[in-house]
Image (cartoon, rainbow, N blue to C red; front, side, top):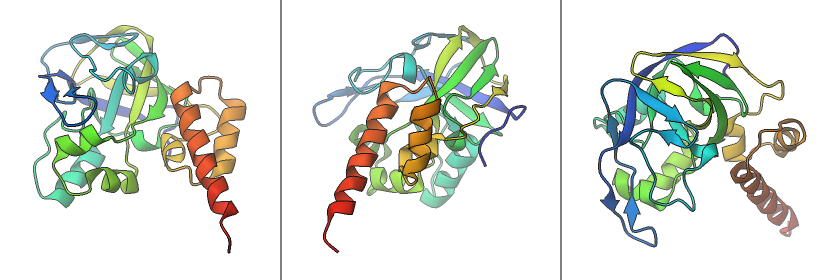
Length: 223
């Protein structure tokens, strides 16, 4: 069920880069190794103090300033994989309990500590994430599950910390979620998003265009 106004959750941990890693492929370096930090951390327009990305072509920027992952989704993966997945393992900046972040509505806003965030996009798994996970067919499995978590823009800068209340204060009427954008299962809903949501970023527009291209190609295949 998508998040609604008045829904609340709690920040379990705030995570920033622990160390850069060497990874295969064109990227070469990755900052996916995020780990919890003590105390409060300032959330600025481009992300959390002490955090950064290496691959600035595909990650980071104002529309991917902060990445949140739901504790329930993390627990489901830990149970399936039969291993402990520490906070930050998904590369998340915020581990949050009590809110379905993979079903957050694009453009929804929430307060976190002194800051205010806006839901901007789903996380798209990449080869670096697969290398980091070390699990067979990890990108395919993560994609199939579609529990992507969500990226946030930072609308109001301020400090955040473990234990902070997360409160949903606004949800657009269109109701289109990050899961809808990620899966592309309902083109009509994606058309609605583009027609009614002024905050749609270029990354999401590219995702929607790719879904449309695949859909057109499928429709053109001979029966």
